[in-house]
Amino acid sequence: MSDVPSRWKGECESGTQFNSSMCNKKLIGARFFNKGLIAHKPNITISMNSTRDTEGHGTHTSTTVAGTYVKDASYFGYAPGTARGIAPMARVAMYKALWEEGSYTTDVIAAIDQAITDGVDVLSLSLSWSQVELYEDPVAIATFAAIEKNIFVSTSAGNDGPDVETLNNGIPWVITVAAGTMDRDCSATLSLGNKVSVNGLAQYAGNFSSSTEFPIVFKDKCDETTELETIKHKIIVCQDPYTEDSLNDQFNNINLAGNVAGVFISNSSDVYDHLKSSFPAIFLQEKDGATVVDFIKTNTDPKASIVFKKTILGVEPSPKVTSYTSRGPSYSCPSVLKPDIMAPGDSVLAAWPPNLEAASVNDDLMYSKFNLLWGTSMACPHVSGIGALLKAVYPNWSPAAIRSALMTTSDQIDNTGSPIKDIGRSLQPADPLAMGAGQVNPNKALNPGLIYDATVQDYIDLLCGLNFTQKQIKTITRTTSNNCSNPSLDLNYPSFIAFFNDWFAEPNSTTMMEFRRTVTNVGDERSTYKANVTPLTGLKVTVEPDTLVFKTKYEKKSFKLRIEGPKQLADAVVFGYLTWEDSGKKHVVTSPIVATSYKIEK
Image 1 (spheres, rainbow, N blue to C red):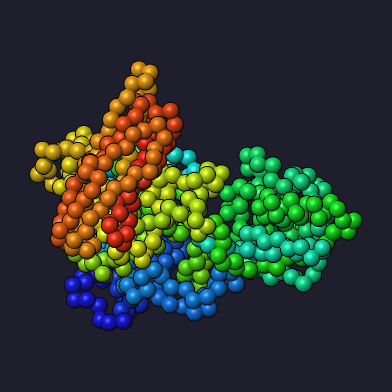
Image 2: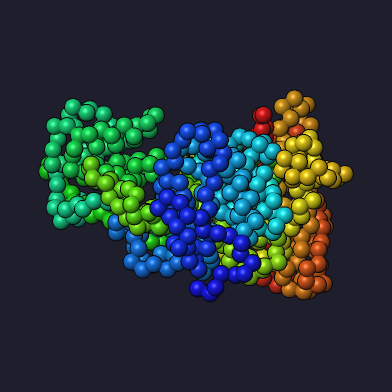
């Protein structure tokens, strides 16, 4: 790599098992922050008092953002190939503020403040606080200063789905990332004695005799532990009854019984918690499970074999919204639709500290330089990396402009040509409270056509509109000279959310919500855009004007979007999309619209 830019002010701090000589032209900063921890626990002994990673989370997320090319990477044979981060030529600076011994908000704020001072271009924050006001949220407080310095900030939405109102990092000046699946499955193949095979999810890391056929038996709920322990040298098939913790109980029963392998039939999202099984286990969808059960019941001596460590590409449909990804509306700022966007978060392969456990087989710990992890923590760095690439192409764009480009060019359609589905909603079409604007599309984001920009003053107007006191606003902006002459909850954002939740409204009474937006032309100098709105059931949506004519690049045009409907919406969520399409059909600028009857209780 080239020399470190002279504008960089960061350092590599020495500490336990880490010294400054370990930095290079790729890793250009390494600092750690624990004064808050020590102040609260003055007699504490910190086991790894340095930036050295003791949990693997930071290693995994940072290499997802910017890891360089590594050939022959895999997780014990799963997902093999050449691994790299989203922005492999980007440099990395690490700031450690969370500790095994405890974590404090002051250390998080100090770490982000230092990153800003050092001169980072992007902050990737796979951490969050739940159900807190913006002026109590260390991420919100610290990142406001980042926006003032034109630093793009990507954050994780949280893993508390599929319930609504569980979203973290609902911060108006950052991008909030939901987690989706990808079109690659780590799997195993169960081959039946009648030459029929079915594939299921699996990440068992051990070796298994793939050429050997074993007797296979169906034990339904697999809840008779005494009987299971008497069945040796057989593959046990279990049917999930879908009661509370049923899959977890089955899994533990088979594990304790010590059978040859377990086959679990379940459409539950809980399977993802058990993929890294310490014993041979495969998880089948109901339709494939029915094939296996029928084979067992119609044969007098049924046998089967299993091949693990398989990787299937081109999985359909993909992507899907994961069940666990946290959903909006945002607690801290309901007037801004969150999350913003979705990125891959399931079974993401990235680097792992080789001295930390990556798997266990029976009672043996196993180690690897790569690991498969899931969560919005894994989705966030994908968007961080894409943000870095966009910032390299458009260094003068604001964080809001980059966020807008990512959101308005995202995909709402999966690889089968159908609307993206939500695992947490029984594979119904996903709404923007789950996936934001859609699945991020890096190439399309390079040429968005129009952008919705926002200034620091716009965010201050929003804070004023939230009826915060001057003291609360100062906590975020760090100044007393906040101009609240134009308070407004209507931020110039590339999405819309309207609340129709007047529980005491008269029957058939209606109301109208109005949003004002300004878009900037970053496409062709002379261009004309026409508005189109997908129908929203029970609501009337209008755009005025419905045509925008641009004569120059960077010219701005404003429009109003109005939503008319009942004061109390019958449905929990109604959603659609506003699209601005240019006459040459070169750009389609898409924004989600949500109308909801949810009411944020504080």
